[in-house]
Amino acid sequence: MSNANGTLLKVEKGNAEPEELAAITAILLARAAATPEYAPATAVGSQAGWRRLERTPGFRGPRSWQG
Image 1 (tube, rainbow, N blue to C red):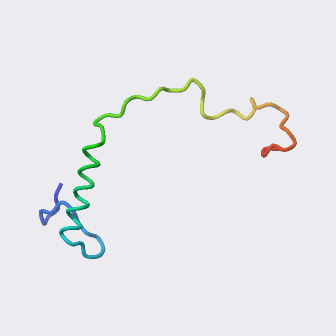
Image 2 (cartoon, rainbow, N blue to C red):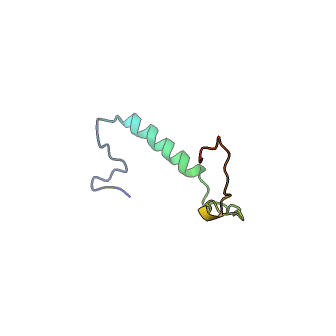
Image 3 (cartoon, helix red, strand yellow):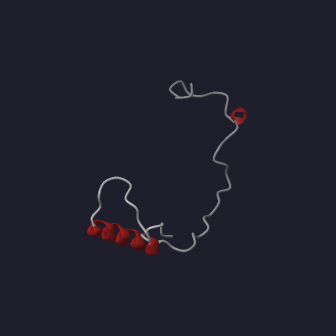
């Protein structure tokens, strides 16, 4: 988890002070602790999210965006 220098974080651009690194580390650790270990299963809908074009009704209204 650490790089060759033994540090956990690497600053790619700019110069980060130790306080800034400590703040971002605290935020990342807090977010990791707040995330549940597993995501509960969501209910699966019985209808597909897509439709076949040949099964659409033949007539669309005159103000339809698909007209």
